[in-house]
Image (cartoon, rainbow, N blue to C red; front, side, top):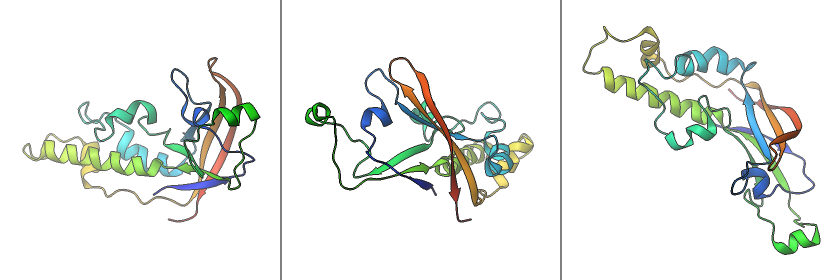
Length: 187
């Protein structure tokens, strides 16, 4: 489950701003703030990430190639979704005219951490279950035993914060930073 917050825009973000280009980072960098996140701190962290990698052997495998970009925990699993398209690339005419005209502007910050929390949880749970199926329960740590016996925690309603930074390309200098609260209305 993911949820979002609408953004009021006068123009859409282009591909370089959201995804970067060859050799440059995205100019808009978004990261979840977990320090005051009740759901993460009370339910997800103790169960999934506290002793990561679990017992030194169980690592998130289902998203191995994404691990570097999204993180473990997946703090960078927040993105901008915009219409008409997310990967907008300005044409030479748009650049030379100094404007991109699009009558339909809508965008939102999408908080997608719960998708990764759930899949990380099930990935680690399945690895541990398969590993210990032949060994019995004597050698299982209390943390892994909790992981094996627990259902995935219900996502809490309430506030979830993100930090949005605007970074100058090439210099990697943060020129603007804002904390935004995205509210999950449902449990």
